[in-house]
Image (cartoon, rainbow, N blue to C red; front, side, top):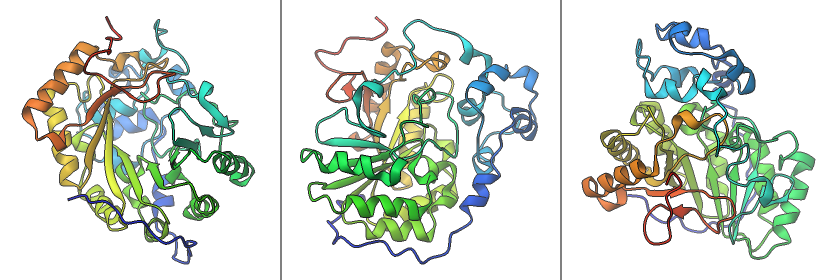
Length: 352
């Protein structure tokens, strides 16, 4: 059972442990769609692979994640999340380059603040996997990167606002950074007395579980705040024994583990699949947190399901599962003061 993590006494992380093998796994990621499909026994000409989509947003997928895909299945839900196809090149009305208002919420270089009390740090633009539905696929990481200048501008902006009590490490994926770089950031943040919590958003423990090495665990355990660690898995098949082990190791640091998923056509848009995802993530010690309706960024329209279908699926989950296994169904709307729950009075269907 996931319980509240106690506050910790601030101390600098002493990173004397050797790096594990995650960097080698990172370098071995597949970047060629033809190679990916050949390993799965599939032909590129049958899958709608697009050179234009690949040029716009490169393929990157760790081999361990590929190993969880079903051989010979063109509809595999993990493959669909990463394969660049011609549907991405459609220009669809209502889909934009900044669907969730990141640019208008900029507080400092690499610092985004949309909601009271919380500041998000775009720690890096790098990811171990390139998800085709990514809402930041058009984001200017080169310019908006909190690591620029040794984190100084980002840390100063947070220090200057006493209302900020929670810092969120995001990206890209913050665990793409070396652990020593993460420690450099959190050592600087530890000097800010009004920070009460740290939240980390990362897909790496799912797609590259080797990243959860001894140095990372040492850093996490030494942090001076309660930590919420939000992973991202959209389908139960993303979990295997290596992911289960990574989750157990993360829980051992005192972090609370949560999962957020995105509703995706052809991936998890049926009740049985969503129920299995909740049950499988909880079996790995991860509490279902958010189920996002798709962010409407250009290039992802083929993943969208209607709000009516999303509401129906969520109602089915509530009827089928224990309440703690049902994630909140939300949509992010630029300018709102929080994620918008897709139930109750005041919610207007976006597709209506």
